[in-house]
Image (spheres, rainbow, N blue to C red):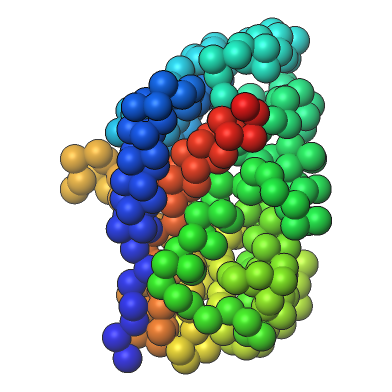
Length: 293
Ligand code: GUN
């Protein structure tokens, strides 16, 4: 069977084009041009790449953007005062603090210091509570991006068994809630599997929709997947590869080559979930402008 490739590149380009048109309209009408800020602490290579991609995406759609670069040895108090400054800056509609943060800083404390009305990452307890209650608010960017992909490809979800692999606060936990909500995409029977799960393969083999966010390169093999499943790969790993100009290649959590032939739908890495995260972040920033006006 030839699977349908769930192209995050394609869907995210469409989302960005739509946003760019809306920004044009806002500008014509003399409204507030959306402005996203990103805080990067230290110089972790992957984080720098992600943040730069976010800033570039802002430029593409016509948003204002600000990159706040801080030293790895900044104190927690100094970071919190930067957060406070962004909370009070009327030009900044939304902002993110790129994770992970250096070990000496309490990530939860920083996340909770972000004003909920500017929490475009959707990581604040207020945002997560609204998601659980199905109230309007900011959805975490990666899960929201996955919903958008499912919608774009009309992947059936109602009554389906969705197995979410991983229970992180950023992806697995919110994803499980979203796939269970009374909505489309949603209305799934959801199972979450994690590091303590027994008989893992027996469960994943029952999945009509398998969302993989465990952070282990090529962990999911063909024997773990049901014939005709939809597989969404959230993993992204840099593997050293001297034959590449960059010095690395990217792998997902799914062994794509052997899993793909069994699937009805599968998202690749790169070009799958990654670009959708950024598109959702832009959508959330646009929502921030309208919610806060
Ligand atoms: N680190 C990995 N993914 C994300 C994300 O979506 N937002 C932020 N702020 N940090 C991350």
